[in-house]
Image (cartoon, rainbow, N blue to C red; front, side, top):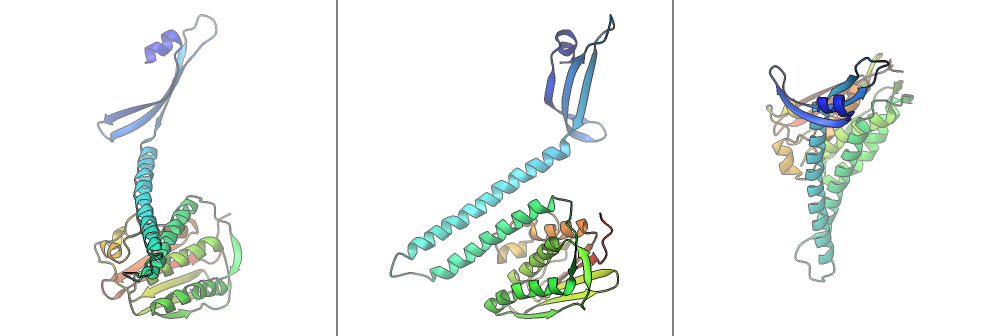
Length: 281
């Protein structure tokens, strides 16, 4: 190929070369090359650019697999919704149809919300603003309280003291929504507790539930994209596995930290700590 470039002026554009190297293993390189003429009788040169696109290809392959899996879940849910809706046309229904339609519709809503959060997580430029930590947490508490009542769960909230925090309110809202949504979804009975504490340098928010819990060997993976613990899949078969990944991603972008503690059959506590005065531009 290089000989053709030197001899005929042939150009190489975005040529993928898959090669196994002795020390770093298999890599995919993207090659671009062209001939450069020099003045006078000087021989031509070849400009060769080699780009390692292994990580890019792996990300793209993961996205394609994720899209295929998610599309499969969405289509299954939509098919069930259509089927149940058609049953509503019959006067003699064999089973309670409306609750199933509502449940499937909620599952689809969660999938789409997590997909949108995931897309937003790729934007690493937070929009900072000075906001009330107490009001921010109160709004999320009011938004989830009715969900707990519908499910028969007791909901408790401890608001932080009055005080402002410099952060991205949209991302903090999505962090809290994901944590609270998980708590409600995976708690068949008992209670959900939301607690906020504002210190001089940080805001700490914990969401504690009495749900199914997460086995110890699954805990290290809960923040991985698309990962769902087997116990979670039993409770909610539909899902993207992006909720906790988005929580951690947003916390990282805001300069914060994420912690999780869980005991199967006892419950889970997720805690996020965000800097009160962000140093980011």
